[in-house]
Image 1 (cartoon, each protein chain N blue to C red):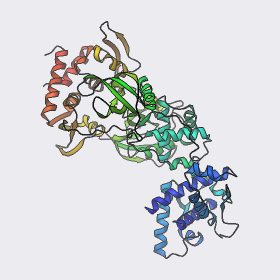
Image 2: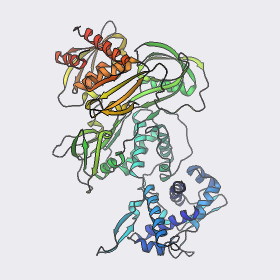
Image 3: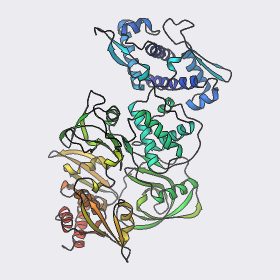
Image 4: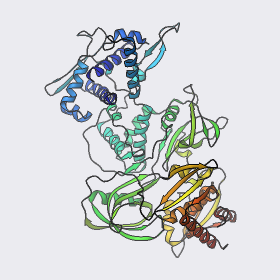
Length: 310
Length: 307
């Protein structure tokens, strides 16, 4: 715990020193706002610098660091004149975040140049890394605007489960991308609660002109699946070509059988599980779940009818 | 904690200014903050300090102290320690900060400490943007990124087989990370899903290969899943009016689309992975149909199987 706090403190200190050295005469207020210091915290860090330095530890060996009125003074600390390099993880996380936002088309111009400059010092050439979000559909931008402005929208939405189309009024909170899709979260008046919609399933979104007050803290941009009372459960054994199901969906992993993983899959609608089973074909075996079995059999029947073989 | 911070500053200052390998003993008797401890206490303190510095990204290495290689010492070279200055403007810093806020990995925002290294958080200028989550970063991603940047060969197990790959690059697409590069003895790069590889070992030699000039990792991972693979077949599909709008949004740029009078949509596209394509088609249930070729109709029916 203390070590953790020490690490955080040292990391901020080693970022602050080079900045101050590169900007002589910089004001306390600016250093505090850039590095998230209070004046007292900054004074304490500078005091540590003031009594540290090179062996000998006499007046000429120690660094100079103090607050002089409104000014931060650092001297005799040339070995800390440059910030520490980014670790592989830090560099990758930052580049990935920047490139992802750039690819969505929602990024400010400065991000493009920032990513290019950062890539130039972190990766051998700019072809080595590619981070793509699915392109934000046109609707995503309109919905995002409605969310920012707090305007109720009327959606024509086709559900993932039954494939039913409904018209619903939604107070949009946030538009976000995860796992290769774009989503809208908000308060749905039809459902009477918080819902997440896949943007590509929204056929139409019309502004209503009605305003609402957005929640102070909209929930984070993730697709959480909250189990409900009408949920359908299925226990599925996954063959070699179906192992991705355990990684992709929030399933419960059970004891393996015959050397293959077994998962419990929960969905708000039997049609979702049925479709997954048909999709996986011989790569999955349903062990439990009569509703899922019925839904899968029904879909197989409809598909065969469509292809004129039933 | 103040004394620990001072000791660590002393240690870093000493290592950075000497630039040569120094033994633990020399550190103990030279650097202020260590001297007064007994043998065991010193060893414990020094171990903890090294751990902490390495965790922050300080590239502390062990190297022989002289040509006879009898003793090992710790060395920290300025060039390895310091970040080459990317020369960011405040506006660019703000843009990166914003990106780090809205793009997350499995719900986690990148550590803000990173931005301190880049010059802190400038006064913010606004601009709300869409949020995004790249999914949880697979465990080996950082080591692979290092291998990519240092051009080291990697070996790992994938789909039950050992592989040796020259890692040209990393790609994030449709919620997953891919390592892209040719296998040993091959020239064409392939894509490997990072969360499915295991037993990763990174080669000891940096600069083990060079990428073809102008090569781009993004081009090596296909746009739509059914484009992955080698031989492609031309396929014709009909989508019913009620789902045509949705199919249209998902089809890649290469598909040739014809609208039917009733609102239906006929698409001609090239399919390389039959398995991925059939799986995608099932998502439309019985409101879409493969028209051509007959073999693909049969493949879909075989996949759907018996009740």
